[in-house]
Length: 470
Ligand code: GCO
Image (cartoon, rainbow, N blue to C red; front, side, top):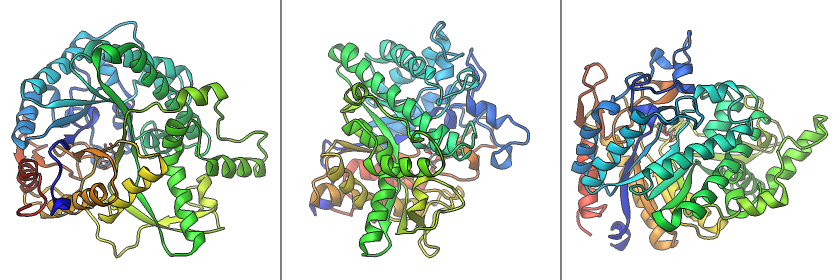
C-alpha cells in the first residue's frame, strides 16, 4: 500500500494569513491596510459587516496557536506577515519595532517547539497609503515591495528558511483590480488587473533575485510563490473542449507561472488578448509586454511552486462571449460547476478530489517537473465540531495527491491544510468555517477547541498513513 503512505521526508503543515487571524488592527503602531479600509466601509461589502479587527486575536494568543500546532504534530506552519505592521506607511523609512517583535516572538516560539516557519510575505493586506497612490497597477510599488522584503530577509532570515513572495496574486489582481471581488474592489477587467499582474511579477522576480544574490549564501533558505488554481476539466473528449480547458488553465495559472518558469506570458494569452484589443480599437495589446531583458531576468525565479487547490470546473469551447465576467478568455471558453457535484458550505467549493492529481501532473508536464508544494487545500462548513465532511475531504484529496506522487512521479515536497483554525473568510466574514480548530468568536478570549478533523490530521501526521494500516 505504498500509495497510501507518505514518505518520511514529506512535510505536513497548516496555513493561516495575517489579516484573517491576527486582529489588533490598530495596535502597537500598525498602519491601516486595504482590508482594514474596506471592512470599515459603510455600507460594508462583508457578510454581517464582519471585520478582522479582532479576528482570532492571534496577535495576543500566538503562544496558544503554537501549542495547537505542536499538538497537531505539524512539520511547518505557514503564516503571513502584515506589511503595515512592519512598515505602517508601506515605505521603509521607519520600521515599527513592536510589529517586527511580534513576528520575531512567533518565529522563536515555533522554533522552540520544533516547527519550521514558512512565511508568506504578502497575503493581500497592502498598506493603505500605497493603495492611495494607485496600488499594484502603479509600478512605483515594485521597489516598495522589494524594500519591505529586504527588511524581512534581514530581520528574520536567520530563523526563517522558507519564503513565499505572494499568495494568490490572481486574487489580488483579477479579483481586486479587475472584478471588484476583493480589496480594493476596483472594476477594470482586462486593464488594471493586467497592469497589477505585470508589477506583481516584476516585484516577485526582483525579490527572488535579491534573496538569491544577497541573502541565500548566508541564510541558506528557499523561496517560491503561491498561485491559486482550480482544475479545469474538459467537458467532453472533443478536441475543441480539450483545447478550451487548456486555454483556461493558461489564463488562470499560466498567467503567473509561465513568466516565472519561462520568462513570458503564455502564447495563447498573448495572441488572444492582442486580437481582442485590436478589435476594440486599441493601438497596442492590453496585455503589457516584457522587454527581452525582463524576460531573462524573470525566467527561473523560483525554487519551488506553491499552489492552493480547492475545487474544479468543467470547460467547453464557445464562440459566445460570456457576458457576466467579460474576461479575455471568455470569448473562447465557458467554465462551470455542475449542480449535482458534492458541495461544501461555500458555494464555489465543489468537492472534486481527482482534480488534485490532474492538476499536479499537469504542472509537472507543463513546467518541466518543478518542486511543488500544496500550500492550501481545505473544506468549509458552518462550524460543527463533528466535522466528518472535512475529514472525508482531506482523506480523498490527499489520496489523490499521493497517487500523483507514486504513479505520475510528481515532485511534491509538502502539504498545508487550510486552515489551522476558523478565521475571517474575506467577503464571507465569519459565516464560513475552514478550521481544524473551532474558534468561539463570541467569547472575548476567542477560545479554541479541537474539532474531530484536528484529531484525524494529528493521527495522519503520526502514522503518515491514509488507511488503517500501511
Ligand atoms: C488564500 C485563500 C484563503 C482563504 C481560503 C478559503 O488566498 O490563500 O483565499 O485566504 O481563506 O482559500 O477560501
